[in-house]
Image 1 (spheres, helix red, strand yellow):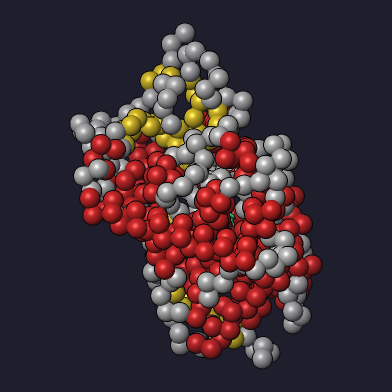
Image 2: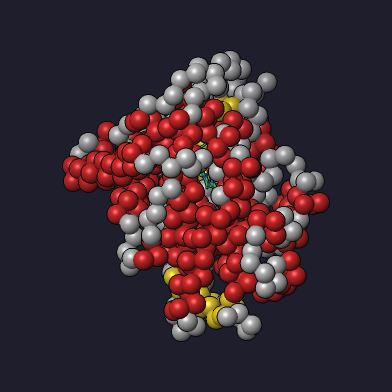
Length: 467
Ligand code: HEM
C-alpha cells in the first residue's frame, strides 16, 4: 500500500522556509496562510529542521492519541529552556519521563486542583480590585492600554496566589524588571527558533543579553524562595508545596534550583496566556455587541450590586461560554508540538494516510484546528458563545476544544486561568461601561510565545449606581 507524501513548499538552502514566514504579521499568521495554500498538512524546514504542520480536526484528533504520540517541547519552548540556566520546569521538560517533570507534576497537581484554586479567590479579587480602582481614577477620558493592564493584572495575580509575592505592577509606569527580562527571553526564543542552530553562536551580543536576562529571572526566583524560608508564613500555596512537599512516589523533597525553575514556569506560563485571553475576550465582546450586552445582563442578574464572591462564579454561565469561545477563536497559546513516542514502532509511520519520518515534530495549529467547519459548521469563524454553553460544550467531540493542550502534558493552570478570567470579566462589567477607543480599530496581533491584540485601546465609564 502506498502512502501520500506530505506537501512541502520549496525552501532555500540554509535558511529553509524562513522566507515563507516573512510575508505575514506574525509567524502563526504565516503558518495559517500556508495551510490555506498547501492544505491541512505540510512540511517546512525551519531552524535547520524539518517540521510538519497540521491544521484540521481529523489530523489533530489522530495526534492527540496518547498511546502513539506525546508532547515534544516545540522550537519556542526549547529555546526558552536553553535561555534560562537551571533544570527544566514543568512546561519546558523534554518529556514526561524526565525525573524533574515527574517530581514537579506529582507535587504540583494538588496545589493547582479545584479546591486550592477556590481558596485563591480572595487574592485574585484583591488584584482585580486594584485594576478597577485604577480605571475608575483615570476616568472616561483615559485611553486604556487594555492588554498592558491585563498583563499587569495577570502577572500580579499569579505571583500573589502561587508565591505570595507582590510585583505591584499597578504602582509603576513600566513593567517590573522581571517582566522585561522575561519578554526579552521569549522574543529572543521565537527569533532563534527560526534561525539554524549553528548560527546561534555567532549572535554574540544577543547571547550575552540572553544570559543576563536568564540570570535575572533565576535571581528573582531565588530571592522569593529565600524570603519564604526566612519568613515561613504557613500559607498553603504552590510555593509551600514546592518547598515542603514530598514526591508521593519517591518520598523526596525538591532541590532549590528546580523550585526556582518551576516558579519561573508559573510566571511565564501563567500570565501572558491569561492576559491575552482577557484582551481577546473584550475585543470579541465589543465587536459583537449582542454578546457584550448579554454578558452585562448576566452579571446584573447574578451579582447585581453585591460584592462578587466565589459562589457567584458557577452561575456566570454565559461569560464562561464567552471565555471558551474566545479560546476557540483566539487560543493564546496558538501552537503546540507532538511527536511519535520512542517506544512506538509502527512502520510505516503515517498520519492521515501521509508518510512521516519518525523524528519530524508535528506542530498543531490550534487556532485553525478549532475553526474546522467539519466540527463547528459554516459559522465556524463567528463568535457565537452559545455554542459553548455547558449543554453544547459537553457534546463536542473530544479533541474539538484544546486551547489548554492535551494529554499528560496539558495545562496545569486551567482552573486557575478560568477562575481568574471569569472573576475579572464579571467585576469589570459590574463596574464599568466599555467601548472601543477607536471603533474602526482592526485587530492586529502581537506574538511572542503567546499571541495578544496589538495597539488595542478601550474606554471605561463608571456605571450609574456605582459609587
Ligand atoms: C501547559 C495553555 C494558563 C501553567 C500549557 C499548554 C497549553 C497551555 C496549550 C500545553 C503546551 C504544550 O503542549 O506544549 C494555557 C492557556 C492559559 C494557561 C491558554 C490561559 C488562558 C496557565 C496558568 C498556569 C499555567 C495560569 C499557572 C501556573 C502551565 C504549565 C504547563 C502548561 C505548568 C506545563 C504542564 C506540563 O507540561 O506538565 N498551557 N495555559 N498555564 N501550563 Fe498553561
